[in-house]
Amino acid sequence: MSPTLRQQVLRKIPSVDDLLSRQEMSDLLKTYPRTVVVEAIRRGLGRLREEILNRSDLSASEETLFAFENLFPLFQKEIGLQVQPRLRRVINATGIVIHTNLGRAPLHPLALKQMIEVAKGYSNLEYDLALGERGDRYSHVEEILCRLSGAESALVVNNNAGAVLLVVNTLAEGKEVIVSRGELVEIGGAFRIPDVMKRSGALLREVGTTNRTHLTDYEKAIGSQAALLLKVHTSNFRVMGFTSEVSLQDLVQLGKQHRLPVVDDLGSGCLIDLTKYGLEKEPTVQEAIRTGVDVVTFSGDKLLGGPQAGIILGKKDILKSIKVNPLMRALRIDKLTLAALESTLLLFLDEKRAMEEIPTLRMLGLDMGALKRRGNRLLKRLQEKVKKGGQFALKEDVSQVGGGALPLQELPTIILSMKSPDRSVNSLEESLRKSEPPIISRISKDELVFDMRTVSDEEIPLLAGGIEKVLNQMNEK
Image (cartoon, rainbow, N blue to C red; front, side):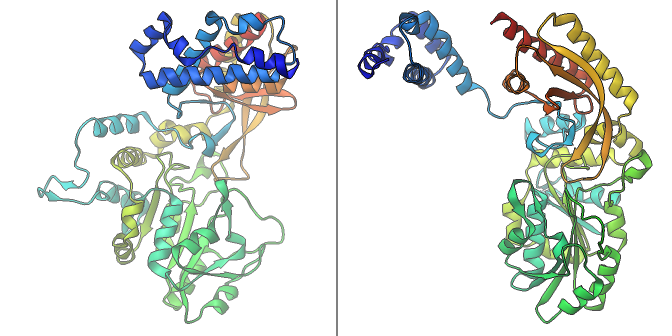
């Protein structure tokens, strides 16, 4: 198409005012704010303009492009995109249990119920009902945290990075924090321990090498500027082979000899010995506290299975100084997080119940029998509903824990694989990702894979319906 002809076609695009004068748009204005409708028209016309500029031949369909019956659904779609919340529920069929990009730990129904109860009215967030005076928001979870962990005192902030920042700033601002080079990790989103420490105002003192650090390395680094010994959970990686690291217990003894506090950034926050349930060893919070460590920090939304939070446990005198740090107000958690966290922690009073009911722990503990039954339910529904366009099979595979916890653990699982003779696997993945609700899968060996470990029984109808809809739309084209 020549530039002149293209300009002629572009000039046929109707104006916003002309479109607003139509009865159909007037009806929309009764339901949606004028600003939303106008913006939808502008966006829709913008997409039409792009199509005209990108197409090489419009002669066959030029008139239909501007037909209102073709434009109106486009405007309706744009309105929907504006008023629909951006943060939405998705179906996690990736097999990654603690999936940071997908919100990490799903919450227990009791936590959700308590959040609603607290949110719909006023609460005793910072009010002591027994004394009738101002209270402490952290008191709602301190007792249960101390009971479960054996710590003397407890505090909660917005996330574990915030917890480390607050602790290091309180104990070592302007002084040296001694850390093994092998523990200077970078976690998801390019957050690095050295950067967090730098923002805290402390000075990083690296000791040892990437693969081997000895107790003598820490001893030699202790000088007049040393203020803190820090041990960091290596999160989502392990150094294998010719390695050596200093145990937390040995580091605690060294700290006592030199009157230096020791902080353990435990990361995943495991309260249960998972080896009893056939999983690999992950250091527990209770084990860390029993070493006599001064402070332990960990996340609330990993193996704890609660909301995003940074939990700080430790010696009462040290936590007392942390609580009065001015940064506390910037890092404090809100009433909804407290409600969800308290409800989750109460479940740990019964370990068996916690493993069976907290979604994250329940998914980790699923056996192959349960996974096969779930997979068969999905396969049966698809075989009944999808007549063509999709090929399905149940297979054995492995899931991942995710979230920087148990990085070497492979969980045997059942997957449903799908492929189509008519569409590429990438196209299928994109269509499902953009469906309602969005279905997040993974691609493996040129097949689309749905892992039964992270799809709940209640989500099977939604997952089957989403797959059926995408394949049926493909067949209609």
